[in-house]
Length: 136
Image (cartoon, rainbow, N blue to C red; front, side, top):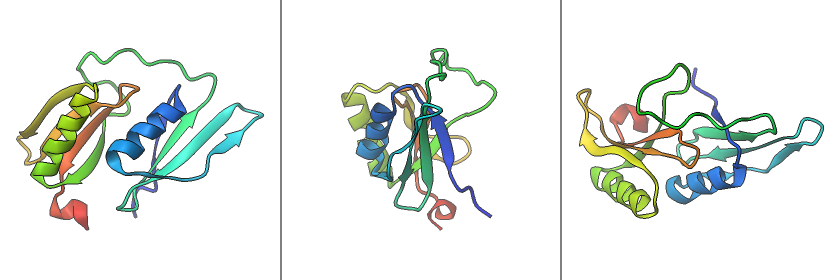
């Protein structure tokens, strides 16, 4: 078994699509629109085959601003950037482009080399060094 995809709600579909394609190299599938429900989505596919669904609907509300603590539900999306140098370079690029870097790059106690950033909607994204298990 494997996870088929992860989905995120957003109020600005095009902005979030641009973030994941620009910084993480995701390829965009066709735009899906259900006019009766006002629902629109894209599936983004990463080089590894992992997929992220971005979804928008009129009833989606803004989530409270990040206060740095955990909440029940979505915790983070982890994206393997490759080498330690690639983690550092992507983190620096995101910082230069005005995205909030929560911490890192750093080695964590459980052996990950990572940085944590917020996407345009405030969702935490971990940018990690690829582990052998993650590369399989």
